[in-house]
Image (tube, helix red, strand yellow):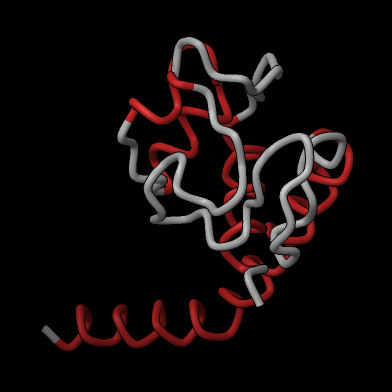
Length: 127
């Protein structure tokens, strides 16, 4: 029992000490990827303006096709997706498979870590 409690304490301390820097690194990588691949159509997520693509401000846990003043495809309007991290991951991986008929003209991002980093960036940069 003491060994189990001690292990939990050590894991908690290590997670607290290093968890933030690992997450920041993921967000930084997500920003780099976003600025390379997504910026052609989307403003950064801290910007509430639409561009060729809709604003991604507050996208995590938002219902699809709900951002103001953007002309979404019928496919996106009818998809009724809630943009959870899991659904964002699926969409970023293969937009045309996740929402057939989407206006998003992107082949997708195949690397799971890159997708996770982009989602971390989207989630962390809404202010």
